[in-house]
Image 1 (cartoon, rainbow over the protein chains, first blue to last red):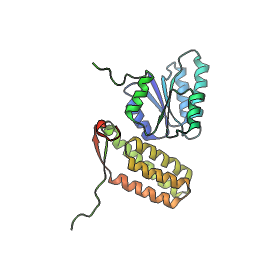
Image 2: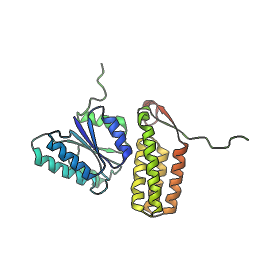
Image 3: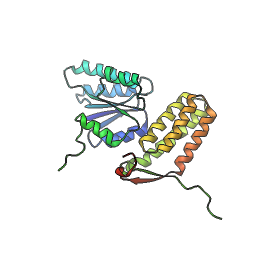
Image 4: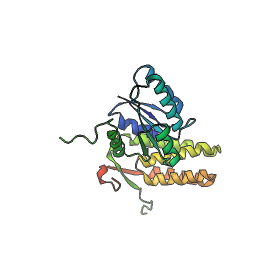
Length: 137
Length: 112
């Protein structure tokens, strides 16, 4: 399983990559253009991302614009395959940004900063991307 | 002479962050330096972007007081108050320099 983490903040990338590497191979991008490039290569190599973690405030293209471009690329490449899970991550929780993420980007979850390990893993479990909390034995 | 230095602020942070905390502090130091350079150059847009990043990162790494100073810094920059922003940046650097972090189980933190 592969995850793509898109954020222009090194500290947030460090946090997410460290946490998520236990569950998937993680690639990171610091801008929308880097994200588009990584996503395209993954499709060409037939190693698509199972989930994308997308910040909204990015230099150049914002996260919502990037997501819509990723959805177009995905549809063009393999419209029938299961779409990637999208988790938007941002301090921006205003109605316009949240609506745009869910309706235009088809987001599966919206995680406000500050990020918390437990909240993030619980959301991933809801999306069946991780097994959390661990099953009671 | 008695030591009259104020006590170092002790912050309790989740143990799960311990392996990456030193790296986080290095990143923050670089970002504060870049922010200071942006302020000196009058580049308010870059300074604002960095202040916003520092605010979000400090909160994610469970440093609410640092996040609050960064929020004031961001607000000052949004208003174009560069002198106030510079003062906030100094306060932020002083806060990080004096920081004493204790790693604890997440369940023992008040917001757990």
